[in-house]
Image (cartoon, rainbow, N blue to C red; front, side, top):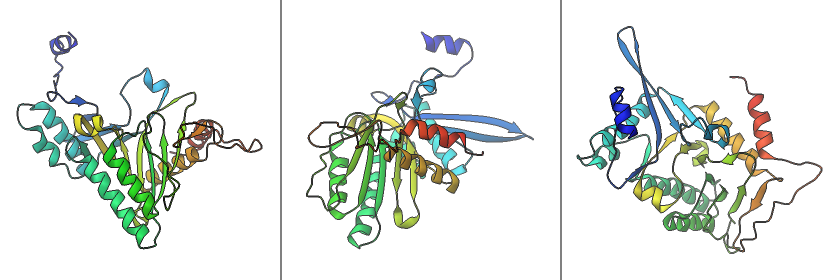
Length: 278
């Protein structure tokens, strides 16, 4: 077994929590500097896999933010001591949204804020990108937001169980992009009175992920990174070459294309990132 092979080489292998698949993409690197330990963390929307990295489109945050690092350590603590109630460590997370304890509730809280703003006649906006949408509770909350007038845009590559009903005050705009690279990132954007809350996550909006898996969503706190992610989402929402409309008729028709101004989001994303100065 790989577990035995790793342990023979001195690698500590965590078996995880019974009946809960570990789907979070987390990594901790500890570095000694002048007799002081510094921690760096990776939080990703995709696997740490050299093969899929070549064909999947994902986002990854490298950070030394203490609040985020504290929560990553709590997730590993829960995995390291599965015989102790793991929810104790997971529920104590203050910055990450984690499954299976409270990610759904935190997402609902963000949507409720947008609903409140829409009802007050102020700007309310959400952009949600996931692989699949099938969780009934979140779908009903999206309907509530649409009825309240929240501007809701969705990019869902796979399963899409919502219905974009015409009687909504603000119709949900939902597309699927299938192109050369697999759209695998999960991103959540909430306008929040202009504060713009942004998260990247390992979790799809599915009951299996939210209730039966160990998942994590991290806030993106730096303004330049939030701006970049928002612009990438907007590039995808403008796709008129590979984007298909998701609607209740399940026709999956391509977005109407202006042949004089084709916008293939994966090409535009490549050019956007190529021109960035880091």
